[in-house]
Length: 348
Image 1 (cartoon, rainbow, N blue to C red):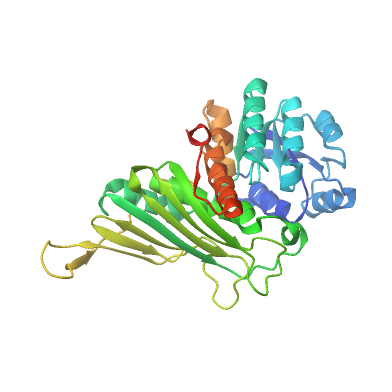
Image 2: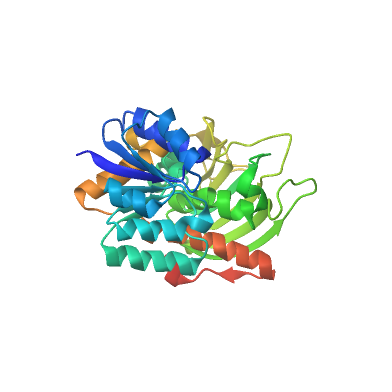
């Protein structure tokens, strides 16, 4: 089955989407891009020309592009403030929708989109591509295996000096809302736990080129007494971590260190005597399915497979709103200076 798709939002991020759709083995031949829409028409025209989409409908009015192109899918790559209207337009034209993150600009807006997807009988999913990488999949398997014992804490550091320019420079809560959701979603996925509460301090460091909230420290309480500690900054020059953060995951029997790239170090106790217990190294298992480790291409392929088989995709909005709830609870905690409970209605 070849899916017909329209792409809304033809800025810089759209290039990565189109490269995955047209070039990656998981997707090649599965999607026909029949339309591109952008409020700035020359941007859409340029992207169509770049990828040889000579037969695609190109326009500045998404409603008109969808009406003419008649796609099965809408790929939503617009800025967050425009997302809800774009998703609703897709539903109105009978499209399944795959959105960039965050899925909404508020929990209330997210809940409304869930209801509208259900009413339309369409799937709305979110590109949480960073859970579709080998390291995250391997860590989930290790935790599930019980080799580290009972999970106690996940701890991550994200420190990068990222000079995007554009809308991010002016965003409120830029780190938490635009980037941390990847890391929070990964922690929720790897641990298999439910987020319950958070205390967060948000700052804009000296020298920051962002208007607001380029750094944050957050302590999340997960179910089963698991703690998730997040430290991050998008205005930290001099020693960049991986985009996936640097992780220390602690269990009752041992600890895993992951640099966010290719380096893993996992050790567990070898005996029960001595001031410091003797340790032994253990292997971190490979991913259960290599097809789920190709980032952007994997999340799109999983979305297509779900539609084809009639199941819900892994990053369906009804699940992704749980990660969004973590973000907005952290923002509320930073605003009030208080510990904030994460509403079970947003996470169950």
